[in-house]
Image (cartoon, rainbow, N blue to C red; front, side, top):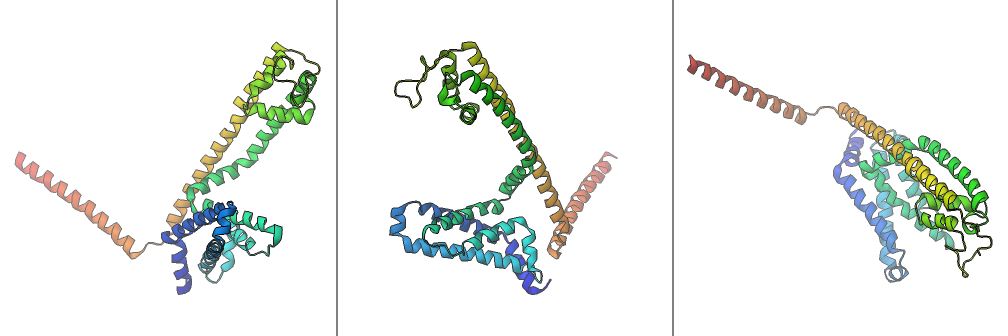
Amino acid sequence: MDKVQEFFKKIADAAWFQTSITVVILLAGVLVGIETYPALVERFEHPIHIGDQIILWIFVAEIVVKMLAEGKKPWRYFLDPWNVFDFVIVAACFLPFEGNAVTVLRLLRLLRVLKLVKALPKLQILVGALLKSIPSMVYVSLLLFMLFYVYAVAAVFLFGTNDPLHFENLEIAMLSLFRVVTLEDWTDVMYINMYGCDRYGYSADSVVQCVTPKAQPLLGALFFVSFVLTGTMIILNLFIGVIMSGMDEAQAEAADMARMEQADKKPTVVSEVDILVEQVAALSERLAALQRMAKNQQQDE
């Protein structure tokens, strides 16, 4: 490793460097938030623009430092997916945006806040857990969609005439069931079909009028209670189980990576001296204990 690479490697791995980048990311998020207030933008347009440019070039400097830390193989910087993510965000901010595309530029600036995921190791574990959970979540989502589809078709046949606001057709029925499975006033939908639209939920001012009321107390209660128990209490909790499993895997991988990094670190003179000092201290304590034991035996004799 040459001196230039070693110099930039020390900077890239330094705690103060990581902390500084984290602070800059937070400042970038604050600036983007300020831009949502037109009065503040109009009043402090120039300072905001200067601050945004400073932050952008700090991120560019971060990329340069990490590339130089790779020495004669700067392309190794892109082997880390998080580095690719950082590079894309920064590069996108240099694209020529004009007119209405300024909104797109602001949204791209907002993505800088996501750099916190890389800056904070615990967030990396969370994101890693979510990514690992995606394959299993696809199957859970498929199971949930099948449940939605079966119940939505049944709801159109059973409640479509009484409650056209929620179950007029298949797509409206699935949207209404999404409301039910999130427990957002789901009892109102249930009561409409238990008591009839003429007695609950509909009024003369309703967008959709109650034309053919039909009360189904027992069927309505069984339908919605069974859907909530199955969809909310069971299937949605499967998502939590899948994510927790992914979390365990991500934490195990992070621990393995930490052990590998610790094993790869070459011992320095300072670290070896520290180890020897600890060993000498332990031997001194052991020797003192043996001397005390010997004195006690002599006194007993």
